[in-house]
Length: 407
Image 1 (cartoon, helix red, strand yellow):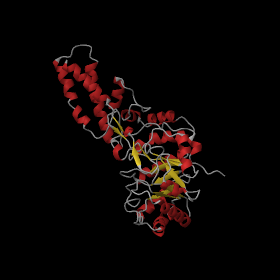
Image 2: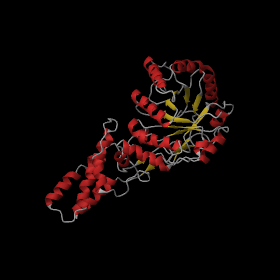
Image 3: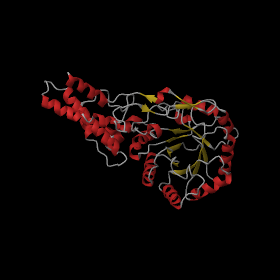
Image 4: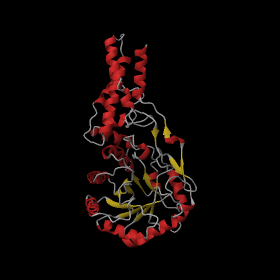
């Protein structure tokens, strides 16, 4: 009997972890979408990584139990990044209480570690944990991106049991496109096993922190459904902002149109305006290079009661008001009086404060993403596309208005 595809969310970002309430809500979402896996692996969960050797607290174990009981259809996986000096028994002792609390899978997260010579240790640890805890074990290898073989990857997979999943992020850490041919090549260099795709979308951690990624899932080859063992999407720190992409990904995983599903979700949750206002040129949900005055007014009216989204909502309100002030000058059919010029300039004086905001909106650059692959030694190689210059729609309109006012 063929095992069902692994489908779900891996909370694997750097930054403030989700709240327990958000995790429960995510599992409820996934149950309704037909997904089956939630992975607890946020990098800043203390006992996941930095304090990995400390026992889980009673509160954490209670949360694991509640998450595991939230849905019979969604399994909870517990992630752990053991240190270099980790003994097999120490790791097993650490994980057993989480298994007893209801976690059904262990994920050994060896990503973003400074060494690439621990493959044998990683393989042996995975086997020991699998045998001792009685649940499936998956690995995030230290060499997790690209299609190249490496001494680490070859050694890790040499003798690794077939039922141990090995994760992969695609050709690069963050990628706009993942193809079936890439997956087949990754399979070839990992001993023939199908990769479990850790899809770094819509994540916005580290150097991406200024951006919201609220668009539809795009650039995923439908053939991946037969060339990967499963798919785990890594969300943003902002749960509500992650939901449109995850909903779209769920539609894709069912063979449905991901963009149509996304449109349905953002419209029903009043998120289209914020999503479009935080998009970039080339994104499917980009509002165009010359949005109408009506569109700018709709952005002024964007609302959200989610405190995590408040900084972006404030930024798009501010930017949209600047754009409308600029458009009042640009679209004027008659020469402006001094009083009208004063009023416009007074509004446009807020441009500096808007440009200094940490939150990037309306296509403001630079857009930074870790578009990095790993070479045949497993070392990271950043690509120039990691940095994209982009001019804000607001900046373009304000400059055009100022040119008129200076004329």
